[in-house]
Length: 145
Image (cartoon, rainbow, N blue to C red; front, side):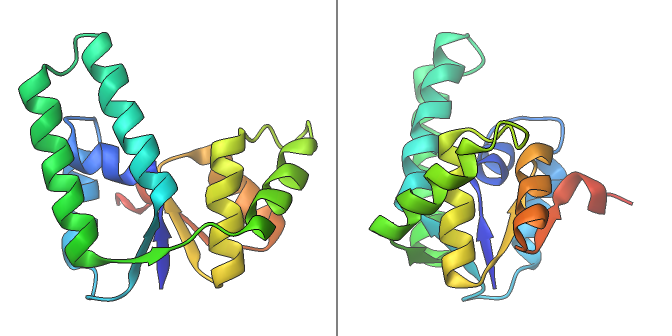
C-alpha cells in the first residue's frame, strides 16, 4: 500500500526525463494499492498551470493531462482525506530547518504516515525526510536499474 505523491503523477502524465519509468511503475501496480489525496489533485493542477506559463505545455496538452489524471485517480487510487492532525504534523515537520521540507511535501508525508503507507516519489528531499521520520519511502529514479 503506497501513497503516490504529485511528482510521480506529473512525471507520468507530462513529458519528463523519467516519464517511461513512472508510467511503467504505475502500470505494474495492483488495483487498490495506490493512494492519493485531494492535495495531489491541487498540486497536479498547479504543476500544469506552471508548465503552461513556461511554455512547456499548451492549453490542449494541459487539459488532456488533467483528464488522464482525473480518470486514473478515480479508477486506480483510494482517496486519503486530509485531517486536522495532518496539518499539525506537517507544521512540526517544516519547523525543522535542517529537514528543508516545504509545507506541501510535509502534508503528503503526514498523510502517508497517518495511514501507514509507504511514500512513492521522485523528490529526493521528501524521500529522505520520510525515512528520517520513520515512513518507508521509494525514490523511483533509484529503481531504474
